[in-house]
Length: 160
Image 1 (tube, one colour):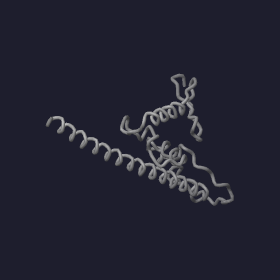
Image 2: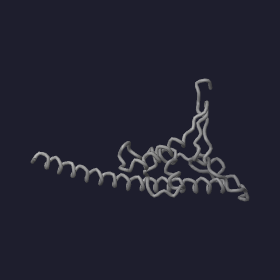
Image 3: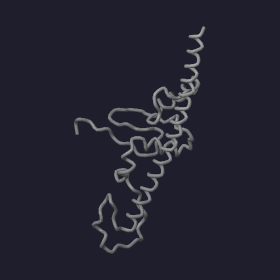
Image 4: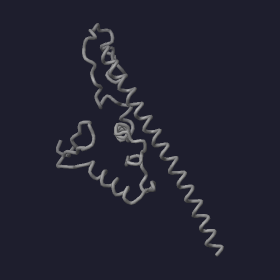
């Protein structure tokens, strides 16, 4: 009888510790999403402002700094290849998608979620799996994300 009550107490303590750890992880994931969105926005404003004024930036260089150019051009959109700070994060695309979708939680982000770390109902888990299964569709050599508004990249093959 004493062993079962000790085991029960250990189980309850471990369960509380797990719940606290999951809450800390969710808070850290939310902070990561906010930080990655902030970096993406700052980087975009820097790249577009420096391109608009024609002076150059740390990505494209400062070769045109001394040339006198008119500023009547349209404000160019920075390319994904120019976003060196955002591209340094493996999860920034998922963070942007989560921010654009208006999600407050990082539960649906596979790159930010540890396997089996969230505690949810079976129906929620099934819905999440179905949603994640519908996201990626692979056809031939191309990989396209059906939910993303960004252009897809063609997968490299050994033939090129």
